[in-house]
Image (tube, rainbow, N blue to C red; front, side):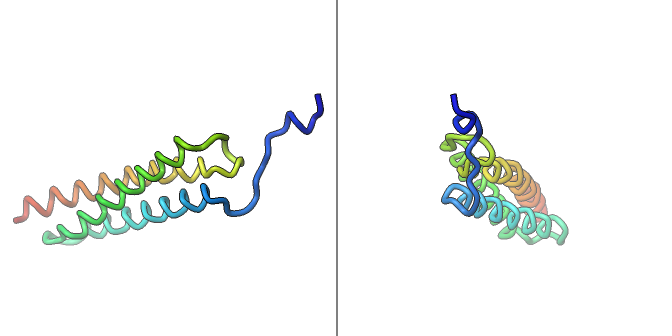
Amino acid sequence: MSDRLLTAATVYGLTPGRLVASIAAFVAIAGVVIGGLALARPSGRGRQAVMALSAGLVAMVTGGIVVALAKGGPGAGYGIVGGYVALVIGLLAALLGWLALGRARRAV
């Protein structure tokens, strides 16, 4: 067999999978920032808590879809690394939003 067939194909550049995963990761980061602000401020930040929770859930679902549809590993161009990043940071955003929502409801 040729050595060319045994090496993994590395795709450079922005592919659709990487783009979707990157957008999901940025949504997750925005959710973490909003959730952190909602927790740091006094009560009455229910809207920010809901936004952080929603952003985290959207990022986790999108990252999960990217990971589930990926046909290759890291470097193949399917965005699997970004999908995992979106899953982890999205979980953090959802947790921060949930905590801030609980604090906002107790203050009412």
